[in-house]
Length: 129
Image 1: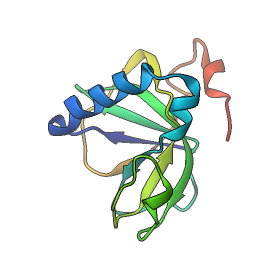
Image 2 (image 1 turned 90 degrees about the horizontal axis):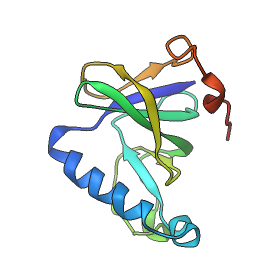
Image 3 (image 1 turned 135 degrees about the horizontal axis):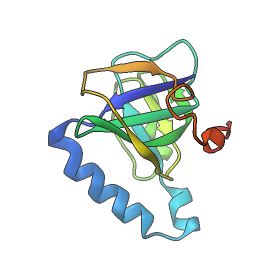
Image 4 (image 1 turned 45 degrees about the vertical axis):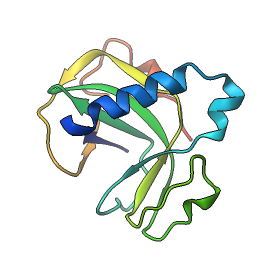
């Protein structure tokens, strides 16, 4: 099971700068970071991948390593955070979606299955956590 979320326009620049910075780090440095995506509610099961929509298309995804309910202690994560919402914890590697998949922006998250759309080479979707 996968889900899809929208990166709000007012957060897009910040997200892109962070992605660019993380790409420049060594593998050891990347492992120190904890990526997360906050949400108002969690699905019943942990998704395998979280796809991201911006500019009216799905353009990338991260693998989801865990999901945590409100009150998770972020003091041990790097960088430390202070959030009270449920969130998805993600790996730090961004996977670009080629070709992009057109989708309008929306709020919240949705269940998503890309296998039916990308029939040409779905082999990159086979990784599981």
